[in-house]
Length: 45
Image (cartoon, rainbow, N blue to C red; front, side, top):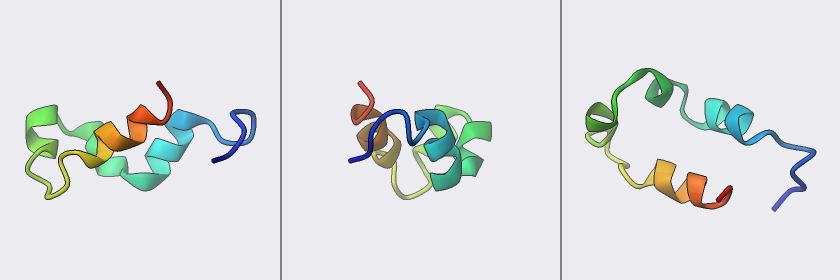
């Protein structure tokens, strides 16, 4: 949606869901939206 030089992917992720950065994948899966991070990362692949 935006040029790569405007938004840094890791910076964007930190704004969307900071707690997930500090929790293991198994804990994140129980947060109620297990596929949201996968969907977000798909944009940057």
